Length: 290
Image (cartoon, rainbow, N blue to C red; front, side, top):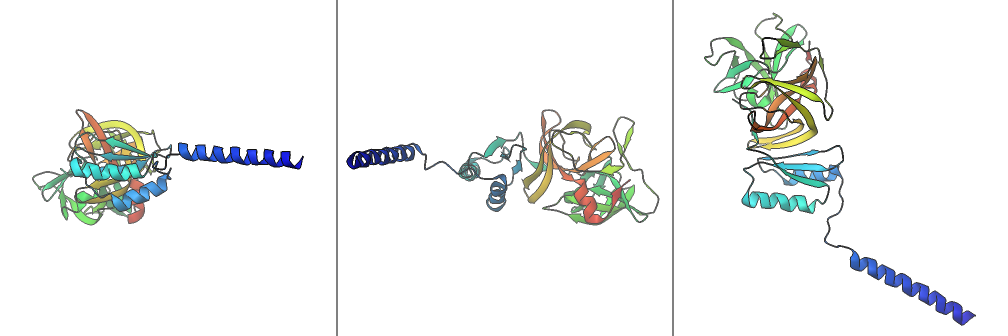
């Protein structure tokens, strides 16, 4: 009895050992680990600074890493080397055209050598201001309502770029400007509330170059590497935009969502456009829409 029991025990141990050996043989030691979106994003923030790249986390937890047509050769090789190492939770995506800021909202504003768009009119303690893109604010201290610089609009109060992309222009008098967004069809949309949109939200954007266009929110918390710096926390959308639309408003009905930052593509073939969340800008300056 004792000998039989020992033989059965030895057989079980041997079978278990064979099973473990088989599992080890089938494992792929070269397969990257399944990393969290937070870990992936942290690594991308530290290691990828190539202009023309961007990333965001999708609702399913995967991180979409985008690159434009300028990321080729050794730049693309370096990027794919990083994304492959980060594993299956990374999706690589090529964008149409070049990822760029839309320097060149509402109505047009001109400062220095650039054309941008006004975003939302805001107020604080009886003073009135206009929000626009930070990369626009960086270009000039005095702004006008026409490209000949005859119709004075106001002075730059402050700008934040890169990392953020918002600026505040102060109107010269206490006369209250309209709190609506011009729709380029003879009508305007009143704006009364600022909030952060959700994925899939229908949105509209206006700008002096391309007028009124619509699309959907496709991502939140996006990071974009422009040629002169990185901007984080952006809203990604399927709305098109072109140079000159920078700073223009992203909205739906009476809700203000964002300020046009940049993107790729155009309004003929379509594209991807990123927006600075307006709530962040309002909080930074202590102002409000009305």
